[in-house]
Image 1 (cartoon, rainbow, N blue to C red):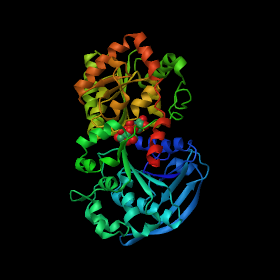
Image 2 (image 1 turned 180 degrees about the horizontal axis):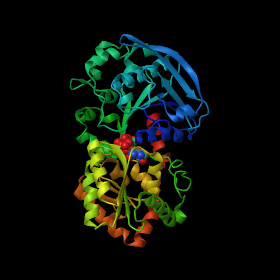
Image 3 (image 1 turned 30 degrees about the vertical axis):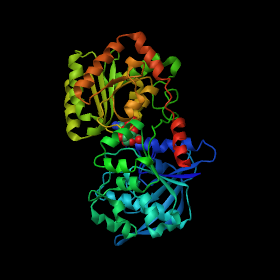
Image 4 (image 1 turned 90 degrees about the vertical axis):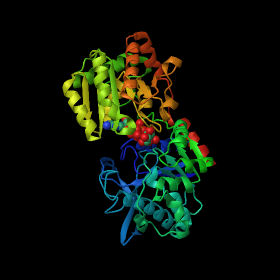
Length: 468
Ligand code: ADP
Ligand code: GLC
């Protein structure tokens, strides 16, 4: 069975968040199963991975968008270094940039990507069994395959849509229709939701099946899906929830080359302490105090706006008996507030920016990782934390409730029921009690490392869906 994953991000080529981690791991694990051939197709970016690896050109053609023609070059990575075939689609003038997001003509870029991929497959007579589309950026593919005469060769190919984040739907103005490949005009209603062109809604209408990245999040979408609730109810028979896994080759404290000290279950307590000592030294923190951390985008979904109040209250209420490390960037207002706090409190370290290596060090060094997310479709941080023997403190929502059970019922972390600074700090007080009970704390570190979140299970669930 031939599966093409279409995505805007893929680790380690280009990563902004968890979408990249998922797309960089799922096909690798699928390929371990007999008879499965999974690959990734993504835009070309001006990134180190692309410069450092060798690619062969497998297609060179043209697409027409509006009044322009664009060259489409598809290249394939030669050595299969990622454990799957990796195809990059380069469209000079549109898909030849530094980053996945943040350009004024983003909608046109995503349209060109989808158009370019289908044009290539059609021209080269490549007919996969499944086109697996990730998020709204590739959400128009199921529509295009069925309704654009140009891609008649692909008609009937099965399409699956994965919703990594329903907050982003890719809504566009109707003028963008000019940038679509020519399609059967009687089908225009499939592109409409509440008067707008909505690629995520179109994906849900047109694909053969779709899933959210956890069962918990899929349940929540029925209640709150930014206006798509009734659509979801209409299409519920195609809806699935499949929890993400983690790539245990990349995320392994025993072999992780980003860590100062490697460790495994046998020497986790001293191993984590050595990493913590090194990190605390770097940030001038006291390594004898519990270390709480946050890693992520400074966005409302992540509850990052609570961070300034959380840090301040937690440090003041414990009279400075804890350390905080925050790694992330995003909303400038949050960045500035945190910067001010980092100058006020010596036990708060802030690193603004995106630093893959540092995230690994923080997962390994921390005692607790906080996730006060308002919305969390799956969340990978809590699973990475557990794999590194760190205790997650999470708002009980979406994928977090599917992966972190509270300690009081024998689980791996601390849950709180409302996304707020107060509730998070209350949970931090519970964590302090646990930290001061060394025996309990050490047991938790060890037992958290035993959880198996590997992709093997979830890849099987995707396989069942593909087979269906
Ligand atoms: P989302 O995709 O919504 O941002 P996830 O929990 O699914 O959330 O995944 C976030 C991923 O991005 C994790 O791999 C996390 O370690 C990583 N990450 C987030 N912010 C940063 C950062 N500032 N530096 C390094 N890695 C980060
Ligand atoms: C999105 C979600 C996150 C999820 C990730 C990977 O970015 O916000 O919760 O883990 O996709 O599926």
